[in-house]
Image (cartoon, rainbow, N blue to C red):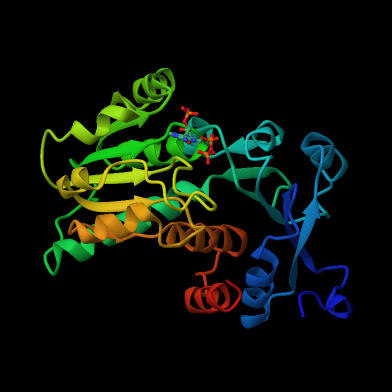
Length: 291
Ligand code: ATR
């Protein structure tokens, strides 16, 4: 059962996910189970929200909502309603995690980029084996981001913050240039990325929708180009096994699934909401069971 309303008391902490549509979100399932597992007096619900500004004006009372997650289409608009925004989230221009501080003020984060970047870092660490170097394994790596939309921005800012040399490749070249300039990187038209291999052992992150269900036969970069990459990440998670990731594996690269970004961004949200470590195994089991 998702909610047990008899357990909700005046002092129960209320969390939720705002979005439109929102009913499909598995977040209530994950967070309620996580709260229960450590005996927290808290509940997490779906909030179908049309007008995000109105929502935050109406529910500005500190008694309401201890925090919320934010999904499509509100990730940009909600940012303007916050008292404080984490500096990377501000640069990305999108938030997905809002926490009410003890003084009642709302502070927001972007956990999407943390989820993706930590998944990629762990993938690189596994490649390095037993002798990881100090600092981020992304530091100094040539990091190619395909796409310059919301997810592209998250990956480009996240990787550049870790000291990677970022290259943004996008179908609309102007958008690639704009994002590359912002992160101090280089840009390419998407069609040129197959011939771009100034060095071996690069990292590739796809954030375009190419290969997403129902166009599962498509891929944003031809297979022959993948041999220059040591690790390939795909932000797409429907399907989990995209053509890009299948071909990257065949080309000998390590791969990181989009589902890993999804679950890890949830770990970060839980930590921000509760100040507790996330019950990672529980989240993973539930995600698998309700896939
Ligand atoms: P998100 O927030 O998920 O990143 P978005 O902001 O709509 O979504 O961005 C989608 C990205 O996929 C863009 O980089 C887009 O390229 P354009 O800037 O040229 O539109 C890219 N994209 C979508 N369909 C594509 C296609 N058929 N071929 C190549 N790139 C595509």
